[in-house]
Image (cartoon, rainbow over all chains, first blue to last red; front, side):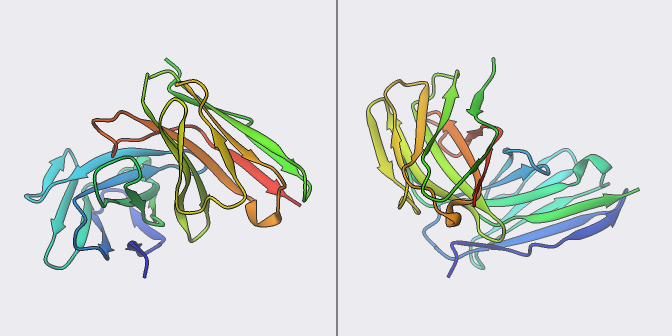
Length: 111
Length: 113
């Protein structure tokens, strides 16, 4: 079973729409969670951390459900510039060799 | 401040050839990583380093070697390339305090024919 599983999409949404992605993780001992963003043919970049209490950064909201072992990312008022692949990332333990990346969910925002 | 740089950006190899990918970072990070990214597989860790002179195996180390002779550089070597090593290779670095925030280079697209 994969450490992190995501729906690959693609999600095609019109500008201004609200879209949500979910991600599940297999190891209940996982400690922390993140969303990375990867533009087409570019490198991944950290988008935001996911806190147990949920957190918001502008139009982006991240939620964690430890009981069900899933993480969500909500994007409100989608912009064309939000088109990218969103990678769910789980930090299993402390130390250097600790991040597990999901395969990503592809989002295309349509004018 | 260039962040993380990788050379080359593209390369085509024939089966059995060797090559070295170079990664350099100017953020004084202790930790450096090499990943490969394949369709449907996500990023997979090949090797990593927690400091100058030290390296360790990641999830998919077979067929690759690495060296970290200087803190700012991390080299990935393919001694005898195979078609299964066709992939996009990313180097990354992080501080010891925030290992979850990894800074990635622009990637190297490698095709082995």
